Structures are given as structure tokens and as C-alpha cells.
Length: 175
Image (tube, rainbow, N blue to C red; front, side, top):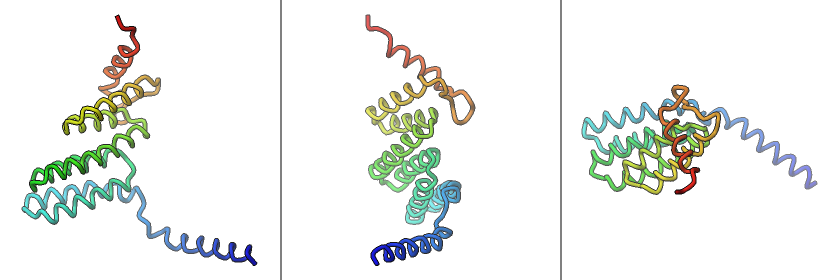
């Protein structure tokens, strides 16, 4: 009897999943949506509509988070800073941006994007967060030491030679 109940519950779960799955938005569908929401935020800021701008930023964040790529998170972090400056909530915006940039940093590392790791590190530099900048540079240096390291955008990253030289100098014996 217990086995029958377990089978029935499993079938019920599978059936409900099959029904619900088509209505769950895909990551690809949300991928481009973050850019449209950032544009809507910018337009709302031009009109002086802070509430609509805040709502658009939240939608952009949700779409970028669902997209699982680092460029969307970087764009949303940058948008948070612009929104904070425009609405006089810079401290809150920097806190949000820091969290979003951190997500971008780890996504870039996971995807093997040297440019993404360095872009996130640069963003933390603009926030004055030297510790995370150092961590990002360490990640980038480690990535650059890998023989397959390359830019995701143009084949060879403009940062790759710098990171490789930093890696070589970090291994050199101290005088």
C-alpha cells in the first residue's frame, strides 16, 4: 500500500510539473528583457518618475538574474548607481550595485570570461572596494595563466597580457 501511495504522489508531481513547466519563463526570454527594463528606467528618470524608475530597475534585476549571464548583471549594477544618483539614494544604490556586481563576478568566473571578471573588478574599484578588486585581479590572474584563457568578446582580451605579466611577476622570486 505504501508503494502505491508513493507512486501516486510521484505521478501527481510529474503531472503538475508537466502542466506548470510551459508557463515558467526561460532564461533566454529574460535575457533581452533586462535591457528593455533599463531603458524604461532611464525614460522614467527623464520624466522625473522615480517610482516607475524603481519598478523598472527591479524588473531589470529580475530579468538579468534569471538570464544567468554576467553582462546583464553588470548593466543592472550600473543602472542601480545611475538610479541612486538621480533619486538621491546613493548609499542604497551602491549597496544594491555591490551585490549585483558580486553576482556578475562569480558568473563571469564560472563562464570563464576574463573580460567579465575584470569588468566586475573595475566596477568594485569605482565603488572604492579595494578588497574585492584584489580578489577579482587574483581571479583574473589565475584565469590568464590557463592556456585557453581568452576574451569572450573579441578572441584575445586586452587585459590578458596584463594579467599574464602579473601572474609571472607574482611567481618570480623575491630579491
